[in-house]
Structures are given as C-alpha cells and as structure tokens.
Length: 250
Ligand SMILES: NC(=O)c1ccc[n+]([C@@H]2O[C@H](COP(=O)([O-])OP(=O)(O)OC[C@H]3O[C@@H](n4cnc5c(N)ncnc54)[C@H](O)[C@@H]3O)[C@@H](O)[C@H]2O)c1
Image (cartoon, rainbow, N blue to C red; front, side, top):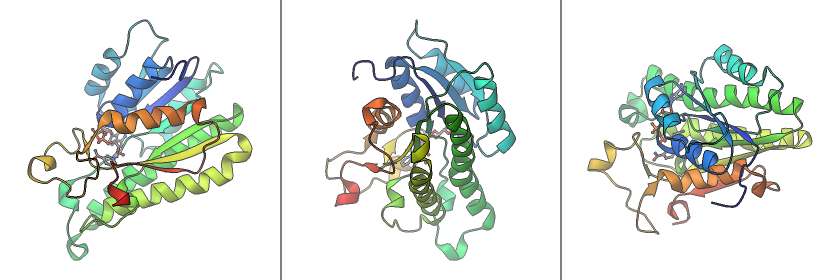
C-alpha cells in the first residue's frame, strides 16, 4: 500500500459487494478513503462494509441497480447533498453468464440485452452522474472495468465481449471530453480472475495462455483500480491497462 494513497478522498465503488469491487473498497479504505459501497446485493453489501478496516472515516452502503438511471442519480445526489465531494468512482458492477457464451446464431436477444444493459449501459449511467458531479467539484477520477475480451477475440464470447469493448471505447472518448474539467478516465481490463463470477466455470475450464503461469486474484486488478483512483495516477487518462498476467500480449 502506497503511503497516503487516498487520504481525505471519497471513493464510490459499484459492484462493491463481491469479487474485484469488494477488494477495491477494502484497498481504498486501507488507503485512507471514505468509501461508498454500491451494489444490488444488500446482504453481501452489509458483509463487505463490515469487513472494512475499523476506525476509518464513515463508510456507507447504497443498494442501487446501475441500470436504473433514477436510482443512480439519486445515489450521487444523496451522497453529495451536503456539498460533499466524491473524488473517484470505480465501476466494478458487471455480469457474465455462462449461457451467453454460445455461437451467435443461437444467441437470444434477451441474453444480449441483459449483458449490454448491466455492463455497458450501467457503466454509462454511473459515468454520466460521476461526470456531472465531478464537473461541479473541480475534477476527479473515473475507473471503468472492461476485460481482456475487449482486447482480443474469444470463441463464442460475443455479448460479453461487445459490452466490454463498448466500455473501453466509452472510457477513451470520455477521457478526451472530460480532460478540460480535470476528470481522468481510465479503463482496467482484467484477465481471468478468481471471483464468485468465475467460480463455477473455473472448475472445468482454465485459460491456456498464461505467461505468468496463473490466473488473477481479485487484488491483482483491485490494486491497479485503487491506484488509478488516487493522485498517484494524476497524469494518466484515456489509458487501457491490462491486468491479465500477460495474456493479451501472448
Ligand atoms: N472475474 C473475472 O474473470 C473478470 C475478468 C474480466 C473482467 N471482469 C469484470 O470485473 C468486474 C467485477 O467482476 P467480479 O469478477 O468481481 O464479479 P462478481 O460477480 O464477484 O461481482 C460483481 C458484483 O456486481 C454486482 N452487480 C451486478 N449487476 C449489478 C447491477 N445491475 N447494479 C449494481 N451491482 C450489480 C453483483 O451483485 C456483484 O456483487 C465486472 O465488471 C466483470 O465483468 C471480471
């Protein structure tokens, strides 16, 4: 942990009840930030906030569906109503479903729509509120989470790849648009990572190309996301950061 990584900062983390987002919340809290943990899953959210280091500033939870524009707006307005500033937003909420990984001829609209709705539209809705908020407060840092499948093709992973490719493109375009407002936007692309999302599939299938010889752990991506939230990354915007053990380079 870098000294004073996020002292006096407030970081809002979506998808904070599980996996990578939960680890981001933990690392940001360890780095001195006040953390607003957002997720759909109320029970896991309560566990996540209870697991944060004691004695820190007042962390808060917010049950919110990132696909619901009104709920996302209310979340930002609620946490900023007293003029409080949200310095960084980490977009970790996302879904993958095994039944989506099929040839395109058999990919149903409903599956495509659900994946696009959470991964791409959800990220858009959170980024839109983050930009509105940060413009009023002199800037901030937004981190999006795509995937290595935004960087390279993966057999039959059509809907998820398209959603993550969209997240990457949105992040770059926002970085260009928002630099003048001192808002940085960077995109992290995790490789296959052991989290509840991948628990089942990893029992019967592992990626074959692994230059570092292992799959990722949640903290591998979370460390980089927390760093990008902080001022240590003050000259980084529009970057695509693969955290994949070398997968995309191989
Ligand atoms: N695990 C991997 O191998 C991997 C690889 C590349 C990218 N990613 C991406 O990393 C991010 C985190 O994934 P993870 O592996 O930690 O998954 P996870 O399933 O452990 O955690 C995702 C969290 O997002 C929440 N969520 C889902 N839909 C939501 C919604 N509509 N509104 C609010 N919260 C919602 C879930 O409740 C869950 O707590 C996702 O965007 C995922 O696509 C994961």
